[in-house]
Structure formats: structure tokens, C-alpha cells
Length: 235
Image (cartoon, rainbow, N blue to C red; front, side, top):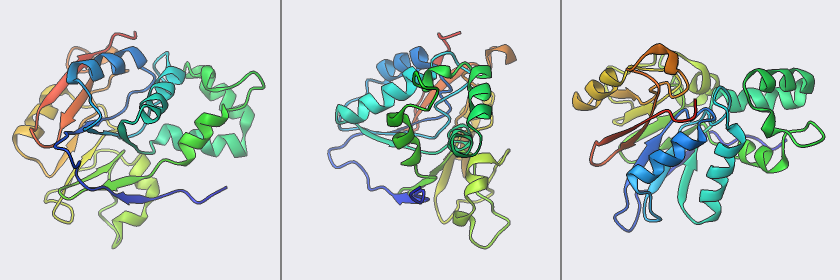
């Protein structure tokens, strides 16, 4: 298996496009589609997706197909590895039966073909995911960075799995945008208004049971600082 890409530097869009961030879609394809329509995604924009495309919501296959479709249509989409994608890749090679049981419990059997194997186009997509993006003014990652070690950009496990990441000052002069930990919408708004050094954009789209402060999919414009929220329409 080819070595996974860890980090990628991304330059700003050339034609005045926006830099948009969405995280933790979790199989909520209809919600994702509505959110993209709300923000009016165009081919000058850069769209950053911070992992966890699959599981929990009822339409994991459709979400991945949507992302692949955007790539094929020429949109500038930059996708990251989440812990759910990393788990799928691990189990795919180490324990296919366990993977099937996991995907069944997570409403995601559509990711498998008629032979019970992960569809080849999805494997290529997951294996091509980076762990972080470095922009001029931001770092983008699924879960966070391990700030307790000398080289935080080397700990890929933390990038997918750590909880409750926070940075008291800009990491290498950049704000960190991340997901993975469902966060109240009012807290996300406050982090943006306060220009926090780290902002969690995961509003728990698949966690509608947590109440009205959760259950939304968020798009954040890095330049205008605008938040656009779409309530879950998949569940």
C-alpha cells in the first residue's frame, strides 16, 4: 500500500474565490447538498472538507459520490482524513469481517460492492486523503494537533483521534480549524467572533438527539468569517 500523504500546502485561490470549510458530514448527503446550495459553491472557490464523510447518517455512499462528483466536475475540493476513514482503511486490510459488521451498525453498507468489498473508487479516494492542510493563515485538520511533542505535524494519530483540542495562541502563526468533537452552535459562533486561535466547526450534524444547539452542518468562510448552518434533513 502506498504511503499516506501527511500534509499539503495550499495556495489561495487565484480568481478571488472563497475558501470554504465543512467538516463531519457523516453520511448526511441531503444536508450536505442543501448546504452547498445555500453557499452557492462555484468553481472559483476552494472547498475544504475535514474528514468523517461516512458512518452514522444514512447516506455514506452518496456523500462520497458527491465529493468525487465535485472533483470530476472541476471544483477545487480538498479533502482530509477523518478517524472513520482511517478505521475503514485499517479494517479493510486487517479484518474485513469486522469492517462489514461496523459498516452495518453505522448505516454504511452501501460503501461495499456486491462481493462485500469496499468499492474501488472509494478505496482510491480514502487512500489519497491528506491528514492536514497548511494555508497562509490557517491549519486545517480533522481532530487537532498534539501540542505536547516537539513535532506536532508528525503525530497523525492525534490528527484523527484527539478530543477537545485547543490552542492558546496561533499554531505557527496560523488559526487551526478542525472538527471531530460535536460542539454547540453558540460556542462555534463565539469562537469565530473572538477570533480564537482554534475553532471547532463540528456542530454534530448526525447528533440531532443532543438538542437544538446541535444537528447542523456548518460552512465557514475563512475570509469573510461568515458561518452558514444547515439543519439536518437526512434524519
